[in-house]
Image (cartoon, rainbow, N blue to C red):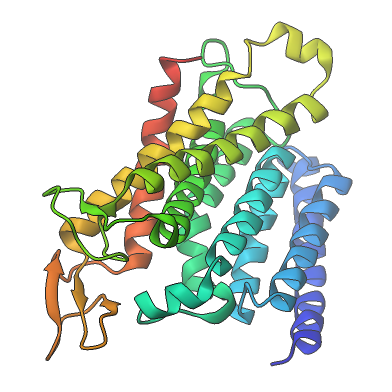
Length: 322
């Protein structure tokens, strides 16, 4: 399906469905006391993900299925908080650029390298599903809107906000570590479980440059969260709230911790082997030389579990900082 037809399908399906959902929300708000969502926020939550999906289709960063799934992810995050939307956009754009960085070199290392880094619905769900779930919990428990982090007087809402940021920081940090670390490092990485050198592209391999860029990837998400709060939350509210700048540190830790969790899982329950052409493969078979791990999870499942664990851990880490 070409880009223009795919985009028209997205419009014709998403807009009526969103309108029906908003009418249901408006009806429930008058009959059951459910909080009515501001129409402008609902409209933004519908239109902005469609525009991002169109950009992703045009840049071949998303397949059609990935665009549809991305619209659902974007809708939930935007409806919950514009802060989450900006974090999602930063993750999507920066990770797409990272995937395309030195693509010719990665093609020689990866068996299933895709030109342009095109993501399907499974990849979108495994990278954005946890953040979407936490955003949905935020809508149910805290409503829609932008709120500063306050782990003393507004613990549950702040916990959910940090969980959303943690999930995205994990995914961005791990993507940066994989995409930049595999082509920028000068030597072979070491396996996180044995500390023995392994070929580049091996699941569970870590390097100094990979660790640094994973923290930078998380820092970018933390910066997006912090700067969006400063722009959208009134100065009176921000003055009464605790200092928000530690979010930058928390975001960097989210990228760092998430990347290490992903590497540990990848080194143990995700298979890595080398084929006859010297490329890293994720499945055992004839002629495949085993390197590490056992064939239980694939890369998508590892990403999903890593983002979930980081989303749970990071709010506890933030308690020591904020």
